[in-house]
Amino acid sequence: MCGIVAAVGSDNVLPILMEGLKRLEYRGYDSAGVALVEAPGKLGRAREVGKVAALERLLSAAPLTGLTGVAHTRWATHGEPSQDNAHPHVSGRIAVVHNGIIENHQALKAELIADGYVFTSATDTEVVAHLVERELKVHGELLAAVGAAVSRLEGAYALGVIDADRPDRVVGARHGSPLVVGISDQGCYLGSDPLALLTVTDRFVYLEDGDLVEATRKGCVVHGVDAAGIRQPVVREVLRYEHDDQAVGKGEFEHYMLKEIHEQPVAVANALEGRLGSDQVLIEAFGPQARQLLGRTRQIHLVACGTSYHAGMVARYWIEALAGVPCQVEIASEYRYRDVVAPPGTLLLTLSQSGETADTLAALRHARKRQEENYVGTLAICNVPGSSLVRESDLSLMTHAGPEIGVASTKAFTTQLTSLMLVALALRQLHGGDRDLTARLVHRLRYLPTLLGDTLQLDGEIAALAKGFADYRHTLFLGRGAQMPIALEGALKLKEISYIHAEAYPAGELKHGPLALIDGSMPVVALAPMDELIDKLKSNLQEVRARGGQLLVFADPESGLEQEEGMTVVKVPGCCRFLAPIVYTLPLQLLAYHVAVVRGTDVDQPRNLAKSVTVE
Ligand code: G6P
Image (cartoon, rainbow, N blue to C red; front, side, top):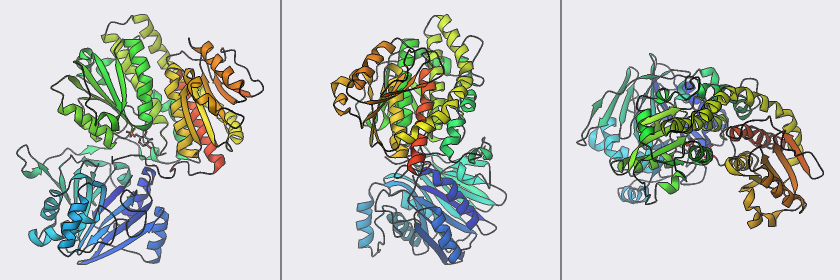
């Protein structure tokens, strides 16, 4: 998705803006641009289609300098990726960068054209530049002009705005798209993500919806809207960013994704840290109100998008089996627009790596509005402290995966699963489940990071298999029970980064349709841990073999499945059935990764995809 960086400093800010853009590359984008106030009254601008490196080349041929500037990576929504559509957009003295979507842009555009404004792009953003320019003539001052302009906007936005006549300030606005303010002794910065600014500061103000901010070299003043709708200065806490900046590098690995796959034993250990007692989960470690909130929960609505949705699907099996609490899982973009019936005692549990996914946030807000009805409260499982989802939920459980840069989610997923297992066990404790199984699972959770480390030893074997896999055009993934969502996640990983079409099915559903696809050109990947469904799964695999399908089975050493003609078996370290979904995720991530490497795709930034989807 789009990324914003803006800066006002005491030196040329171009290097800060460019470094910020590079750090936002992971979000996914198709063009980039920058605008600086080069001298009072003079704006310089450069925009280029493609990577930030292409913009850098343009700038090395025609450099820009200035103490104030805005920069942007664009992920096209309105208008194709092109130089004209790239941000910043300029109107007179004003340059604007924008994340989000202005839903009433057509009506505003007609009004502005009637007023004599000329549009040079197909974007929704350009209306903002012209609106601010028009309001500046009325108010004579940037902050007031931006305030008046945003009062006309419908939709979601984060904005960074500069005025060529006021080189000492940048104005930002946030409504529905993330924006943070970074503060240092040398200047003040805006970013759509703190990661963009970690080379210049670790001190951040997380803006809230409706906030405007005026940033100068000396700091920032935030203007919020009070309950009566009056805009006035507000105090927002300055928070230190917790993560070590080293965590943002690739280290010895060729790709972020491979690094993040190999970080999973440590990430999962971090997700467990401080949350396990000797034979039970330490519910108080989730937060002071956790015991009361989970104790009052009678059912759960679990809402998420993408990979996070798959984690939710696994959790349904765990929560119902371990705690006996009914659990419904739904894609956020559906939940938010449905007339959901929430029976009394419903907990809304949202899952999100970024905590900024537009649909998940909207689902949370939809439920919060109706909290007085039947919802007991909201719990977010999230990887980004200070994100909107965390700030707007009653309770949050951080996954502690550390920064995840690869677009295809890996360690964020397994730490979500680990956190969800903790929630399932906490619910079991509060809802009177027998203690023996709880104690056994707590013991196994302690051992989970080691087990994941052992599973990663399969890397070489899977890399070799991937060579034979890369020429297929379609793949089918099969699993049963809690492995079914893992099959879905394996298929998603493969299609995201290798562009091979992949589908997943519950193995028991094979004969109701997908069996028609099976022939020698259709490989089938199956997950076969030792559980009560193993014999049923074996029968499903026979159905594939009988039709000439090529099987790749990830199997428990005790499963009795052995290599044979048409069936490759990779032995996954033995594990208990409840934790098997976490363990079996790893070989599927490795398979997708190595197939993508053989096919030569852009593993960390797959085409058309974004890391953080902050628009609907
Ligand atoms: C995008 C990412 C996925 C992610 C999904 C949900 O599609 O590419 O990797 O699973 O958004 O993101 P979230 O941050 O809410 O988990």
